[in-house]
Length: 372
Length: 159
Image 1: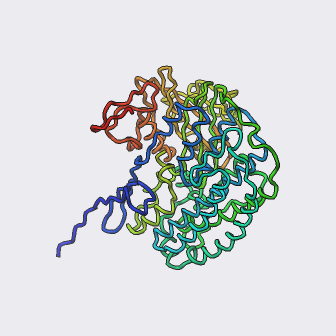
Image 2: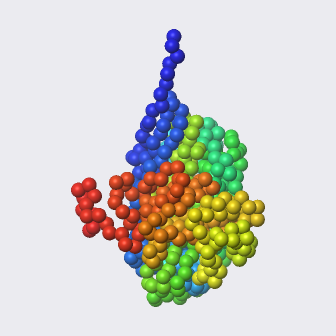
Image 3: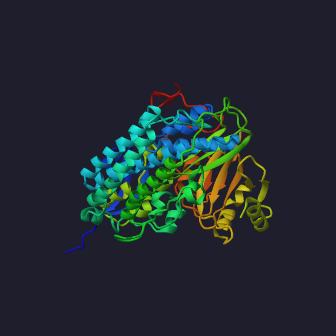
């Protein structure tokens, strides 16, 4: 019998595939069931953030930052206002910084809960998703009682905040933490150490540390590969240096260091660290006026700033160039998802089509963040 | 290392490659380098043990609005915990610069973005296509003299 000749085939995944977490199209070159190459096509959600930013005043840009990574709005605002404040060289009251950190960490937990829940959904576990969203709702309630919005907040302004914490916030936040700690344990029993889940994610999509760094990966994607790099500790901004917490990294516990399970598990462990930060911040929350330092007119001197911050997805940075006028000359958003997604081909080759679902989910992208 | 020491180190290796150094800039100091040498400089700063810039944080296109485009490289070292900004200026009429994709893979998508939005051509880039805009879009929107096309596939563009 003549030897069967096989050909490679091109398979389109998306732009509306449920496991792509938004409008992403991945062009898969497959040989049978094995992925030979995976080429991401992005831009479906491009909303011209950088072009918009050039025709607006510094304050007007904040709501646009909200919409970059819509699961991490607080973190986006935080990075942007830090940049503007650095350019203006203004000091904000300590209370403002503490509240920002509390909000940013709550946002991180909310974002990780979406990531963890939908990741389970991708793999076929439906129940953890409901649990995650139940707890995320409580965080959104906290945001809503603070600023009236549940998804896009426009809460952090250059120099301050739109509102102070409402009465009862601190108690409600503590009550949430008390409820939530056992829920993480439950989640781990249900999903993280579930044998089927581990089999689907361990030893899949292995990302070596040197490749991760070379591709500009950051956040849980980088830490999943065992690199101890978190900007909140390595280049502390805001008041992160006042709190006692640890950087968590992947361990290769279930398979190989840097596999999908490691990237997933780093997010679970990070939730606990965020809770530690929030607890300390609530305990030591200073008094003060949160709007005292808000400038009436924002007109930074000629100069430029590149401000880095650790968003739930990794290094979120804004490169803001000022020409001395009331509008920025150029704003570039360095989105963590953008660089993280660019290494997708690197961790897909040689795995099966079914593994692609696990791999895309583990990188944890928000398409709004990729396309801006 | 601080920005001055980093500058000295690059200047020693490439005496003609460095055009300007602004240490007293508002917030971030930067080094302006010759565009044609950027790949050699990139290879040097990423491999030199004292510098070891292994992490290209961001690569931004830029329109200086004086007839020049530019590329801004934000570099960081995970090992040595320092950072520096490199800039290269290119004439708008002939905006070409060697790609640094072979040094930092993260430059791949960032250079495609700068090509897409500014029309800067990165020589030696393995796959220089538009990334955010449709392939048949006309012009490069972040250039300061950009005029949007009237129609795109029958749809009116300026609103």
